[in-house]
Length: 378
Image 1 (cartoon, rainbow, N blue to C red):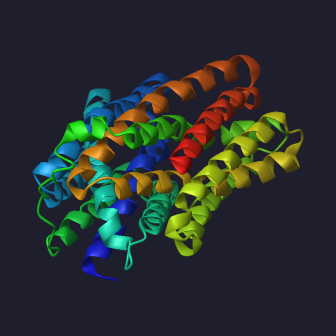
Image 2: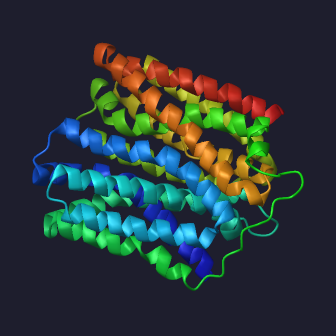
Protein backbone atom coordinates (compact mmCIF):
# COMPACT_ATOMS: atom_id res chain seq x y z
CA UNK A 1 0.00 0.00 0.00
CA UNK A 2 1.41 3.39 -1.02
CA UNK A 3 1.42 6.43 1.28
CA UNK A 4 -1.29 7.94 -0.91
CA UNK A 5 -3.52 4.88 -0.44
CA UNK A 6 -2.79 4.79 3.31
CA UNK A 7 -3.78 8.47 3.52
CA UNK A 8 -7.02 7.71 1.69
CA UNK A 9 -7.86 4.76 3.98
CA UNK A 10 -7.34 7.03 7.00
CA UNK A 11 -9.52 9.75 5.45
CA UNK A 12 -12.30 7.28 4.61
CA UNK A 13 -12.29 5.90 8.15
CA UNK A 14 -12.48 9.48 9.47
CA UNK A 15 -15.34 10.20 7.05
CA UNK A 16 -17.32 7.23 8.34
CA UNK A 17 -16.52 8.22 11.91
CA UNK A 18 -17.74 11.78 11.26
CA UNK A 19 -21.08 10.49 10.03
CA UNK A 20 -21.56 8.21 13.04
CA UNK A 21 -20.05 10.23 15.88
CA UNK A 22 -23.12 12.30 16.83
CA UNK A 23 -25.32 9.23 17.13
CA UNK A 24 -22.59 7.55 19.16
CA UNK A 25 -22.14 10.34 21.73
CA UNK A 26 -25.69 11.74 21.93
CA UNK A 27 -26.64 10.00 25.19
CA UNK A 28 -23.60 11.03 27.31
CA UNK A 29 -23.54 14.43 25.61
CA UNK A 30 -27.20 15.07 26.43
CA UNK A 31 -26.52 14.16 30.07
CA UNK A 32 -23.54 16.50 30.27
CA UNK A 33 -25.37 19.44 28.65
CA UNK A 34 -28.73 18.70 30.36
CA UNK A 35 -30.62 18.82 27.05
CA UNK A 36 -33.67 16.89 25.83
CA UNK A 37 -34.22 14.87 22.64
CA UNK A 38 -35.48 17.94 20.76
CA UNK A 39 -32.16 19.72 21.27
CA UNK A 40 -30.24 16.58 20.40
CA UNK A 41 -32.27 16.54 17.20
CA UNK A 42 -31.19 20.14 16.64
CA UNK A 43 -27.54 19.07 16.72
CA UNK A 44 -28.21 16.31 14.18
CA UNK A 45 -30.18 18.72 11.98
CA UNK A 46 -27.49 21.41 11.95
CA UNK A 47 -24.97 18.81 10.81
CA UNK A 48 -27.15 17.81 7.85
CA UNK A 49 -28.13 21.41 7.10
CA UNK A 50 -24.56 22.63 6.68
CA UNK A 51 -23.40 19.68 4.54
CA UNK A 52 -25.45 20.63 1.44
CA UNK A 53 -24.10 24.13 0.77
CA UNK A 54 -20.57 23.43 2.05
CA UNK A 55 -20.06 20.31 -0.08
CA UNK A 56 -21.12 22.24 -3.17
CA UNK A 57 -18.76 25.11 -2.31
CA UNK A 58 -16.01 22.57 -1.55
CA UNK A 59 -16.45 21.19 -5.06
CA UNK A 60 -15.50 24.54 -6.58
CA UNK A 61 -12.56 24.86 -4.20
CA UNK A 62 -11.36 21.30 -4.91
CA UNK A 63 -11.31 22.00 -8.65
CA UNK A 64 -9.86 25.53 -8.51
CA UNK A 65 -7.80 25.86 -5.31
CA UNK A 66 -6.47 22.31 -5.19
CA UNK A 67 -7.21 18.94 -3.66
CA UNK A 68 -4.48 19.00 -1.01
CA UNK A 69 -5.64 22.29 0.50
CA UNK A 70 -9.27 21.19 0.87
CA UNK A 71 -8.27 17.70 2.05
CA UNK A 72 -5.98 18.98 4.81
CA UNK A 73 -8.42 21.74 5.81
CA UNK A 74 -11.22 19.20 6.20
CA UNK A 75 -9.05 16.88 8.32
CA UNK A 76 -7.77 19.66 10.59
CA UNK A 77 -11.21 21.25 10.95
CA UNK A 78 -12.69 17.84 11.84
CA UNK A 79 -10.14 17.43 14.62
CA UNK A 80 -10.73 20.96 15.87
CA UNK A 81 -14.51 20.55 15.90
CA UNK A 82 -14.23 17.36 17.99
CA UNK A 83 -11.95 19.15 20.45
CA UNK A 84 -14.57 21.92 20.71
CA UNK A 85 -17.29 19.33 21.27
CA UNK A 86 -15.19 17.64 23.95
CA UNK A 87 -14.80 20.98 25.72
CA UNK A 88 -18.44 22.10 25.28
CA UNK A 89 -20.32 22.69 28.51
CA UNK A 90 -23.43 24.36 27.07
CA UNK A 91 -25.73 23.85 24.12
CA UNK A 92 -24.51 26.80 22.04
CA UNK A 93 -20.90 25.63 22.25
CA UNK A 94 -21.96 22.14 21.17
CA UNK A 95 -24.02 23.61 18.32
CA UNK A 96 -21.01 25.58 17.07
CA UNK A 97 -18.81 22.48 17.27
CA UNK A 98 -21.31 20.41 15.26
CA UNK A 99 -21.59 23.21 12.68
CA UNK A 100 -17.82 23.04 12.12
CA UNK A 101 -17.96 19.23 12.12
CA UNK A 102 -20.54 19.25 9.31
CA UNK A 103 -18.42 21.65 7.26
CA UNK A 104 -15.28 19.55 7.82
CA UNK A 105 -17.10 16.34 6.88
CA UNK A 106 -18.39 17.93 3.66
CA UNK A 107 -14.85 18.95 2.64
CA UNK A 108 -13.42 15.49 3.33
CA UNK A 109 -16.27 13.74 1.51
CA UNK A 110 -15.94 15.94 -1.57
CA UNK A 111 -12.22 15.62 -2.07
CA UNK A 112 -12.20 12.01 -0.81
CA UNK A 113 -14.58 10.96 -3.59
CA UNK A 114 -12.54 12.86 -6.17
CA UNK A 115 -9.34 11.10 -5.04
CA UNK A 116 -10.90 7.62 -4.96
CA UNK A 117 -10.25 6.65 -8.63
CA UNK A 118 -6.53 7.54 -8.62
CA UNK A 119 -6.13 5.80 -5.26
CA UNK A 120 -7.92 2.52 -5.93
CA UNK A 121 -8.92 2.13 -9.62
CA UNK A 122 -5.70 0.34 -10.61
CA UNK A 123 -4.62 -0.53 -14.15
CA UNK A 124 -6.58 -0.80 -16.34
CA UNK A 125 -8.79 1.64 -14.42
CA UNK A 126 -11.88 0.10 -12.83
CA UNK A 127 -13.75 3.00 -11.22
CA UNK A 128 -16.67 0.93 -9.84
CA UNK A 129 -14.14 -1.27 -8.06
CA UNK A 130 -12.45 1.83 -6.65
CA UNK A 131 -15.63 3.44 -5.34
CA UNK A 132 -16.90 0.20 -3.80
CA UNK A 133 -13.58 -0.51 -2.10
CA UNK A 134 -13.35 3.04 -0.78
CA UNK A 135 -16.84 2.81 0.67
CA UNK A 136 -15.96 -0.40 2.50
CA UNK A 137 -13.42 1.64 4.49
CA UNK A 138 -15.96 4.44 4.96
CA UNK A 139 -18.55 1.96 6.21
CA UNK A 140 -16.00 0.38 8.53
CA UNK A 141 -15.37 3.78 10.14
CA UNK A 142 -19.09 4.31 10.68
CA UNK A 143 -19.57 0.76 11.98
CA UNK A 144 -16.71 0.83 14.50
CA UNK A 145 -17.28 4.33 15.91
CA UNK A 146 -20.21 3.47 18.25
CA UNK A 147 -18.25 0.56 19.75
CA UNK A 148 -15.08 2.65 20.20
CA UNK A 149 -17.02 5.52 21.79
CA UNK A 150 -18.97 3.21 24.12
CA UNK A 151 -15.71 1.56 25.28
CA UNK A 152 -13.88 4.85 25.86
CA UNK A 153 -16.81 6.52 27.65
CA UNK A 154 -17.25 3.52 29.93
CA UNK A 155 -13.53 3.23 30.73
CA UNK A 156 -12.61 6.93 30.77
CA UNK A 157 -14.94 9.83 29.85
CA UNK A 158 -16.75 11.54 27.01
CA UNK A 159 -14.00 14.16 26.89
CA UNK A 160 -11.35 11.46 26.49
CA UNK A 161 -13.36 9.68 23.79
CA UNK A 162 -13.83 12.81 21.68
CA UNK A 163 -10.23 13.90 22.21
CA UNK A 164 -8.90 10.57 20.93
CA UNK A 165 -11.24 10.72 17.92
CA UNK A 166 -9.92 14.23 17.26
CA UNK A 167 -6.36 12.92 17.37
CA UNK A 168 -7.25 10.23 14.84
CA UNK A 169 -9.02 12.81 12.65
CA UNK A 170 -5.82 14.77 12.09
CA UNK A 171 -3.97 11.67 10.82
CA UNK A 172 -5.05 12.17 7.15
CA UNK A 173 -3.66 15.73 7.18
CA UNK A 174 -0.38 14.48 8.64
CA UNK A 175 -0.06 11.77 5.98
CA UNK A 176 -0.99 14.29 3.26
CA UNK A 177 2.19 16.23 4.00
CA UNK A 178 4.17 13.39 2.42
CA UNK A 179 1.92 12.97 -0.65
CA UNK A 180 2.37 14.82 -3.95
CA UNK A 181 -1.10 15.90 -5.07
CA UNK A 182 -2.13 16.56 -8.64
CA UNK A 183 -2.35 20.27 -9.41
CA UNK A 184 -5.75 21.76 -10.38
CA UNK A 185 -6.63 20.50 -13.87
CA UNK A 186 -7.39 22.95 -16.65
CA UNK A 187 -10.79 22.18 -18.23
CA UNK A 188 -10.95 20.76 -21.72
CA UNK A 189 -12.83 22.51 -24.50
CA UNK A 190 -15.76 20.10 -24.05
CA UNK A 191 -16.04 20.75 -20.29
CA UNK A 192 -15.60 24.48 -20.05
CA UNK A 193 -17.17 24.95 -16.63
CA UNK A 194 -19.99 24.37 -14.20
CA UNK A 195 -22.56 25.08 -16.91
CA UNK A 196 -21.53 21.90 -18.71
CA UNK A 197 -22.56 19.94 -15.60
CA UNK A 198 -25.95 21.60 -15.52
CA UNK A 199 -26.52 20.85 -19.20
CA UNK A 200 -25.59 17.18 -18.96
CA UNK A 201 -28.58 14.79 -18.55
CA UNK A 202 -26.44 12.21 -16.70
CA UNK A 203 -25.68 14.72 -13.95
CA UNK A 204 -29.39 15.09 -13.28
CA UNK A 205 -30.06 11.36 -13.56
CA UNK A 206 -27.36 10.63 -10.95
CA UNK A 207 -28.72 13.46 -8.80
CA UNK A 208 -32.28 12.09 -9.00
CA UNK A 209 -30.97 8.63 -8.14
CA UNK A 210 -29.31 10.05 -5.03
CA UNK A 211 -32.49 11.93 -4.03
CA UNK A 212 -34.24 8.56 -3.92
CA UNK A 213 -31.34 6.50 -2.55
CA UNK A 214 -29.87 8.55 0.31
CA UNK A 215 -33.02 8.59 2.49
CA UNK A 216 -33.41 4.82 2.10
CA UNK A 217 -30.00 4.26 3.66
CA UNK A 218 -30.64 6.69 6.53
CA UNK A 219 -34.19 5.43 7.13
CA UNK A 220 -33.15 1.80 7.41
CA UNK A 221 -30.38 2.81 9.79
CA UNK A 222 -32.82 4.80 11.91
CA UNK A 223 -35.88 2.50 12.02
CA UNK A 224 -34.64 -1.07 11.55
CA UNK A 225 -34.70 -1.90 15.27
CA UNK A 226 -38.23 -0.47 15.61
CA UNK A 227 -39.39 -2.43 12.56
CA UNK A 228 -37.92 -5.63 13.99
CA UNK A 229 -39.61 -4.97 17.33
CA UNK A 230 -42.97 -4.65 15.58
CA UNK A 231 -42.35 -8.04 13.95
CA UNK A 232 -41.70 -9.74 17.30
CA UNK A 233 -37.89 -9.60 17.48
CA UNK A 234 -36.64 -9.07 21.05
CA UNK A 235 -35.02 -5.83 22.19
CA UNK A 236 -31.76 -7.69 22.83
CA UNK A 237 -31.66 -9.23 19.34
CA UNK A 238 -32.72 -6.21 17.27
CA UNK A 239 -29.50 -4.16 17.76
CA UNK A 240 -27.44 -7.16 16.64
CA UNK A 241 -29.55 -7.38 13.50
CA UNK A 242 -28.90 -3.69 12.86
CA UNK A 243 -25.17 -4.41 13.12
CA UNK A 244 -25.77 -7.32 10.76
CA UNK A 245 -27.42 -4.93 8.30
CA UNK A 246 -24.30 -2.74 8.23
CA UNK A 247 -21.99 -5.75 7.96
CA UNK A 248 -24.04 -7.06 5.02
CA UNK A 249 -23.91 -3.56 3.57
CA UNK A 250 -20.09 -3.61 3.63
CA UNK A 251 -20.01 -7.20 2.39
CA UNK A 252 -22.05 -6.20 -0.66
CA UNK A 253 -19.59 -3.42 -1.44
CA UNK A 254 -16.58 -5.67 -0.93
CA UNK A 255 -18.07 -8.34 -3.22
CA UNK A 256 -18.71 -5.71 -5.90
CA UNK A 257 -15.14 -4.40 -5.55
CA UNK A 258 -13.63 -7.88 -5.88
CA UNK A 259 -15.85 -9.55 -8.44
CA UNK A 260 -17.83 -7.02 -10.54
CA UNK A 261 -16.28 -6.18 -13.95
CA UNK A 262 -16.29 -2.47 -14.78
CA UNK A 263 -18.57 -2.94 -17.81
CA UNK A 264 -21.21 -4.63 -15.66
CA UNK A 265 -21.76 -1.53 -13.53
CA UNK A 266 -24.85 -0.21 -15.34
CA UNK A 267 -26.57 -3.61 -15.40
CA UNK A 268 -25.64 -4.22 -11.75
CA UNK A 269 -27.14 -0.86 -10.78
CA UNK A 270 -30.44 -1.81 -12.43
CA UNK A 271 -30.48 -5.22 -10.75
CA UNK A 272 -29.53 -3.92 -7.30
CA UNK A 273 -32.09 -1.11 -7.31
CA UNK A 274 -34.80 -3.53 -8.45
CA UNK A 275 -33.68 -5.81 -5.61
CA UNK A 276 -33.98 -2.94 -3.14
CA UNK A 277 -37.56 -2.31 -4.27
CA UNK A 278 -38.46 -6.01 -3.91
CA UNK A 279 -36.86 -6.26 -0.46
CA UNK A 280 -38.56 -3.13 0.86
CA UNK A 281 -41.92 -4.21 -0.51
CA UNK A 282 -41.43 -7.59 1.16
CA UNK A 283 -40.61 -5.79 4.43
CA UNK A 284 -43.94 -3.97 4.19
CA UNK A 285 -45.87 -7.21 3.48
CA UNK A 286 -43.96 -9.70 5.65
CA UNK A 287 -45.32 -11.35 8.79
CA UNK A 288 -43.30 -12.85 11.62
CA UNK A 289 -39.84 -12.40 13.10
CA UNK A 290 -37.82 -14.80 10.91
CA UNK A 291 -38.73 -13.20 7.53
CA UNK A 292 -38.15 -9.74 9.00
CA UNK A 293 -34.64 -10.66 10.17
CA UNK A 294 -33.75 -12.23 6.80
CA UNK A 295 -35.06 -9.20 4.91
CA UNK A 296 -32.99 -6.77 6.99
CA UNK A 297 -29.80 -8.66 6.06
CA UNK A 298 -30.90 -8.88 2.42
CA UNK A 299 -31.47 -5.13 2.40
CA UNK A 300 -27.88 -4.57 3.49
CA UNK A 301 -26.53 -6.73 0.66
CA UNK A 302 -28.52 -5.06 -2.12
CA UNK A 303 -28.19 -1.49 -0.80
CA UNK A 304 -24.44 -1.54 -0.22
CA UNK A 305 -23.07 -1.23 -3.79
CA UNK A 306 -25.73 1.19 -5.10
CA UNK A 307 -24.11 4.47 -4.03
CA UNK A 308 -20.56 3.46 -5.12
CA UNK A 309 -21.87 2.53 -8.58
CA UNK A 310 -23.73 5.85 -8.90
CA UNK A 311 -20.53 7.66 -7.91
CA UNK A 312 -18.46 5.61 -10.37
CA UNK A 313 -20.95 6.41 -13.15
CA UNK A 314 -20.62 10.12 -12.38
CA UNK A 315 -16.81 10.20 -12.12
CA UNK A 316 -16.35 8.02 -15.19
CA UNK A 317 -18.53 10.30 -17.29
CA UNK A 318 -17.10 13.74 -16.50
CA UNK A 319 -13.71 15.29 -17.15
CA UNK A 320 -11.39 15.28 -14.10
CA UNK A 321 -11.40 19.08 -14.06
CA UNK A 322 -15.10 18.91 -13.07
CA UNK A 323 -14.98 16.11 -10.52
CA UNK A 324 -15.10 18.30 -7.42
CA UNK A 325 -18.08 20.27 -8.64
CA UNK A 326 -19.85 17.13 -9.91
CA UNK A 327 -19.51 15.45 -6.50
CA UNK A 328 -20.61 18.64 -4.74
CA UNK A 329 -23.72 19.01 -6.90
CA UNK A 330 -24.54 15.31 -6.49
CA UNK A 331 -24.53 15.55 -2.69
CA UNK A 332 -26.37 18.88 -2.74
CA UNK A 333 -29.17 17.19 -4.70
CA UNK A 334 -29.02 14.15 -2.39
CA UNK A 335 -29.70 16.41 0.59
CA UNK A 336 -33.19 17.13 -0.83
CA UNK A 337 -34.22 13.51 -0.39
CA UNK A 338 -32.18 13.18 2.81
CA UNK A 339 -34.32 15.82 4.52
CA UNK A 340 -37.78 15.19 3.02
CA UNK A 341 -38.36 11.45 2.60
CA UNK A 342 -37.37 10.36 6.17
CA UNK A 343 -39.70 13.10 7.46
CA UNK A 344 -42.57 11.60 5.42
CA UNK A 345 -41.73 8.08 6.61
CA UNK A 346 -41.61 9.24 10.22
CA UNK A 347 -44.91 11.13 9.95
CA UNK A 348 -46.71 8.12 8.47
CA UNK A 349 -45.03 5.70 10.90
CA UNK A 350 -46.36 7.69 13.88
CA UNK A 351 -49.91 6.92 12.72
CA UNK A 352 -49.57 3.48 11.14
CA UNK A 353 -46.35 1.96 12.46
CA UNK A 354 -42.88 1.69 10.94
CA UNK A 355 -43.71 -1.36 8.83
CA UNK A 356 -46.43 0.51 6.96
CA UNK A 357 -44.27 3.63 6.93
CA UNK A 358 -41.75 1.69 4.86
CA UNK A 359 -44.24 1.78 1.97
CA UNK A 360 -42.90 5.30 1.32
CA UNK A 361 -39.37 3.87 1.28
CA UNK A 362 -40.54 1.19 -1.17
CA UNK A 363 -42.03 3.88 -3.41
CA UNK A 364 -38.70 5.75 -3.33
CA UNK A 365 -36.90 2.51 -4.24
CA UNK A 366 -39.29 2.14 -7.17
CA UNK A 367 -38.35 5.62 -8.36
CA UNK A 368 -34.67 4.77 -7.90
CA UNK A 369 -35.14 1.62 -10.02
CA UNK A 370 -36.71 3.65 -12.82
CA UNK A 371 -33.82 6.12 -12.84
CA UNK A 372 -31.27 3.27 -12.76
CA UNK A 373 -32.89 1.64 -15.79
CA UNK A 374 -32.71 4.93 -17.70
CA UNK A 375 -29.02 5.21 -16.82
CA UNK A 376 -28.42 1.61 -17.93
CA UNK A 377 -30.23 2.11 -21.25
CA UNK A 378 -28.90 5.57 -22.13
